[in-house]
Length: 127
Image (cartoon, rainbow, N blue to C red):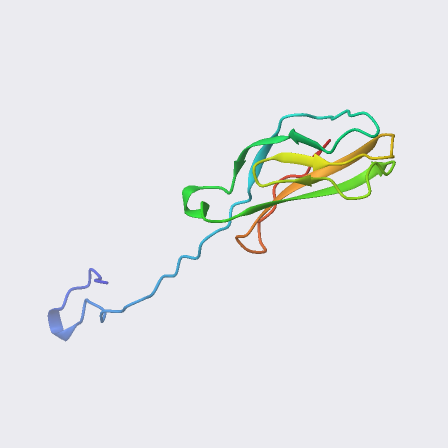
């Protein structure tokens, strides 16, 4: 740093050299996906279902490509339609088995990435 006062008369117009460290920490961007369907209808006692439900599945920018995504499916209302919770695979396939149940249920889906605890969940989508 240099001031405009000059060095005349024994003055010093420059500061000592100082070194600073700047640390840039990475940001975890939330994952994203697109729902292909907003409802699914099947018949009671049908064979186990596997339906493409999610596409454009992304962990975020290129620096997050090594992260993995897990889908969390939660029933939020309606009747029990299966002995087990529906699952969505990492490639967006919805799997469930209705067996002896019938009725309607509403679920939310959230994609969660492996990048840490902050901003690691997508927006919740309901179907």
